Amino acid sequence: MKEAPRKENWTMSEKLSFDRKVGHLTDVTFIVGKDECSATFKAHKLILANVNAVFEKEFQNQSTDQLKDPIRIKDLKPAGFAILLDFLYDQHVSIQSLPTAVETFTAAFKYEVNSLMRYCENYVIGIVNRDNAVPILRLAIKLKMRFVKRISTIVIQENADYILSSHEFIELPWHMVKRITEMKHLKASKMQISYAVVRWKTSNNA
Image (cartoon, rainbow, N blue to C red):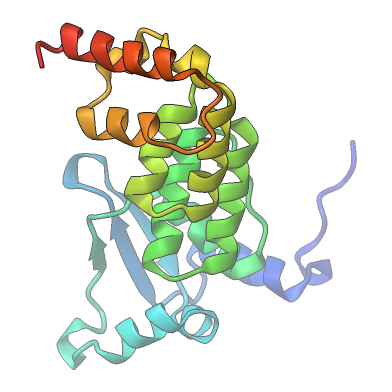
């Protein structure tokens, strides 16, 4: 079995990341998530402030009384914030699911980490297909994922006949029905589009 690398042989980013995770010389604590599912993270202010302008501004605006208090972040989820910290410390991240990509993108958006936002978008783009293109488009609109929005729109256009006739289509809110049926370059006939709208209205008593 290969021996784990000794600390003295690690790169600087590996050492700093290790120190953060074990709480060595950390001077800021974050409590992330809503009370019932929050998690605590420790980090180094100097490192975060040097690599991220949002953190820098946040630390500079702290009053003397706030310097030792934990920073509460209720609008993010722990999994996404954990990956954000990993990325800021050593640029290495691994995203394995759509929920994690969404949580990480949300954290990256809040802290204006464009490269991590793009990484998340690339992951989502890689899993878009005709069965999930519509819900992913809705997600992309909500989160302002412009690249995902573009790709999911193309997938919907290319598979319009399949999507318009699906059961999921009649469960969409009207604003999404309108958005889809008014897309340019839909690969569906005018009759198919009209029928899809009638089917939606009938099912929703509209």
